[in-house]
Image (cartoon, rainbow, N blue to C red):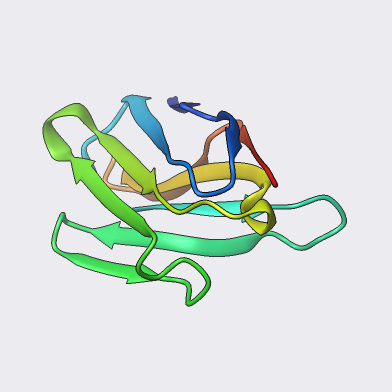
Length: 120
């Protein structure tokens, strides 16, 4: 079994910064893509960013230039540095990872979510 555990959410004023972390553990042979989604109350889950093999990154237009995704393959971890936060960034942030187990089967796993609240 695989678990993704997130940390780093909280309350911050507009213009501030937060860094989210997400670590995967369990039966992991390899990890392909890791990334982040978010979901605000009453809204659909929204793609934020992903990173493939520590090289290729993708960002939603709404966070380009403000958020930076990175990963540490040795720790099976992905990070989201969020700068210049806005009240509209308030949401529950979920990490995910596409993981290959020791039977060489691929699965997508999700974290439990961490709340980010940006006050105006």
